Image (cartoon, rainbow, N blue to C red):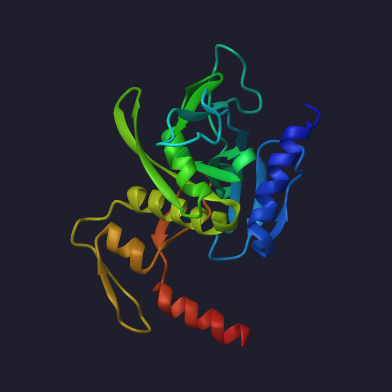
Length: 240
């Protein structure tokens, strides 16, 4: 399929928002977009980026609480009407499902691991209020209940382009903590400062997670070896 202007624009805006954290990327004219990044971003990303459509009230509701939902329609390469589609998790890449609210310069990050065997042109939504909060300079979140073979809940994250790198890290750590699923009493200790964290949510907050670059969806998710504070100190020392 030849590249189109919308795909190129969406991909270019995503790359620009990540800034100097991008080492290299695939052809911006074709989906999906593969990006090799510097830490703390996942080093091997694969982004499926779609333009969102606005609620009937428009992107900038006047007065009161924003209502309605922005949405994207998922179609992946080779996905035909009447067939089931899936994201490509090969090459150990972390997949991100992204919507771009172009007129507000806001990116929406859904949990790509929650979307398996989806229908052609599946609708995926986010509340206008959540997008509006991101437009005014914060990373906003929303819980969505998904119904399929079983009922599950996903957290949707929205951020303006300035905060996209932080939102990407938050999206990855949040999904990793859920998939890591340790025993409730599992403990992780930093070998340098000896700080300890118990349980997935605390391990995520203190250490963060990394993907060990397998061939499937989040093949081997492990906590970072050193805590966030010690890793930050090492990076600052290296750049000093």
